[in-house]
Image 1 (cartoon, rainbow, N blue to C red):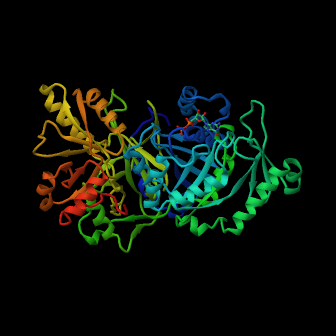
Image 2: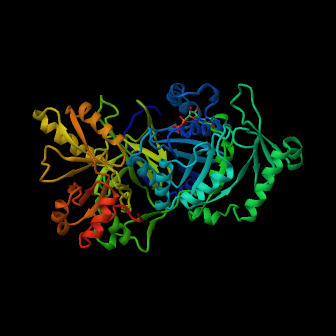
Image 3: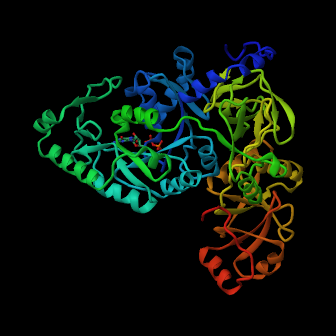
Length: 571
Ligand code: GDP
């Protein structure tokens, strides 16, 4: 099937697919859905390609060094998709490997941090934390890791760029232990220091996985397995040192423990060089062997009150209600009829069609294109005949998906981030937790005569969760405040206001860096304090913005009766 294939709903399909829970169980069990988290430039794109290469998807990684080259390769993936049976959406890369289906869900690649990344992490079952061997843990890695922890996601750590001079391996392990509180349990251990790259000791077999330079031929895994005796002979003291450190690690209890890994207490560590395709096979095998298949998702208990309305930025009250409602947690078995939740909404990708794409993670059952599902938040039917896997401007029709897979729904104007869709048995998944904004800017229409377009655009961006929109009587309707986790969100908002809504805007950044939840009783008094301002979010919650953490502390200290609560649970 291609984009022009007939798209009439197949009325017989749903009944047919409902009848096969065993197939769903089997398909779910062989899926691995994960995201790579990293600080920009740690090698996420390089690793993504290397993974695809090892899955025999891309035959010539040697041809794609450099960002520009990579992009053209990526757009060629559409052809490969047809030829080799992989599917790529702008949200996920899917490929088969060793009788498994791997879904690599993309996190935003730009050099900024935004809420999108957080949302992606709600749609995966595991994360790969990519660390640059020379730089160690960087700010964005730390932030993203905290989200994984909050979500209870198992994390596999890859120390990348080992072919270059970098930090000492033990020093890197200490950073992981100390800065993120995860106990590293290396699966491999480097032979030779960073930069003097010889290979790794496979801690489960005691063998050397030697790095072999393959002249120009990037299609072959540059790895050769040598037993310990041969390794000692070939690598001398570098091997002896690695063995000694490996034994020290074991004596220290730093060995893989599956339960501790799944519980988020430990992280398996792999040493790699994505650019040389080294360690990538180990990573794929590790993902398949250790990381969890799709598990039942927690649902909002229908008996515990009305289901919260999923919104672009769900209210924290709704999150709390959802949390309370799910204790003890009710879940949706993966074999249950189809259900999915929307974790990303993209509009304005195709200016000719002005459509709005919703990306959803399948949580249960089988998705069959043409199914008419129910949108939990409105109770209305949603026809999926235009479900697509898409990349860039090209699209391919997606016919079938199982738990763990990502589907792209076209014309999804009714769907917003956090929403649930289902077949037959009603279900609502809890809203995706929102994160505390740290950047704030007043937004105004450049041309005040275009206020109508301005208002419509701001509302749209708010509902998609591109930015949060805050208002107050003081600032007035013409100058709301945009709030973002990362400043890139402002750039996206500005360009879409101009390009899509024909309402150019001017942003004036505010110097606040903190947002706390407050209440009506505290608002007036807070507003009178220097360096504090109270605004209302579109979900109704009141946020107090403050210049910095110190200001928040001093308000706590000097005015303990005023409500100032963290927006993020556990912070
Ligand atoms: P991203 O921003 O995380 O997607 O990082 P990229 O994949 O674009 O990589 C950033 C830079 O690091 C590029 O110049 C890559 O060629 C380089 N790079 C990535 N992996 C490795 C590696 O294993 N070794 C070396 N030496 N360079 C690497």
